[in-house]
Image 1: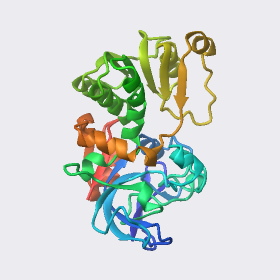
Image 2 (image 1 turned 90 degrees about the vertical axis):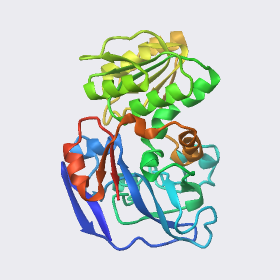
Image 3 (image 1 turned 120 degrees about the horizontal axis):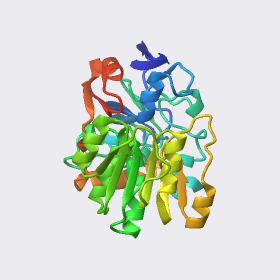
Length: 338
């Protein structure tokens, strides 16, 4: 089968691999129909993420089930499904607690399409993908939800959602401050508005992202340099990839509010304003989203009208994947469809 290999900065190539095959009776083989480029994939292509090539790229995907093992019961051949971007077993202590990102039955930080450091799972930009523990890691798409719409639902969409979902359920009408560029901030804006947030503020240095944020219902703030703080908000989300941006978000979080950090600070140990956090009782959360544990929730909300395509992704046909990575606007969400 053909698979798209990342070979180094701005260097992708289709190469042959052995056909994906069932290994365990709980496996399924999925043919990707829509693959979204994670915000991290854009960094990988640009050569700014520390993952050693070569590897098959891509981890956000929906697809068609081509085959299933004899112990798979929840999905069948021909079903169109959303896949968790993190293989996880569903039965270990961490998975049972809802922490599927910390599954003990796979190598730490396992995910598709990042190479050896994340478990050597092959990527989704390929003719087929082997999905282990298919009953836990796959969900049939609800009626009316297309593979295109759900392509990013297991990762970046879920990441934006988790920053606001539980907190808005506990404190309806809370104000939300989101900062940074990429798809996660825009998904978070859409989720916050859908879930009944009060004031939603979006800060970025990307004019295209700000225009989309305004259409999604946020009060938008153009920033050229991150200030020390913004106005206080109950819920804050850092997607700035910038130490000054992170500090600004933490200082702008209300007493006993929640700040989520979706930025990945490779090789850095950001200083935190612990005095502010302590005196205000701020809760700080970071880490990978628990993908498999969130599949039902994300599909429930999409089926109820929270539209992932409202962030205006750049959509390319399968033969144009390399052009999409090269030419799409900075910060735009990329989705590739067969």
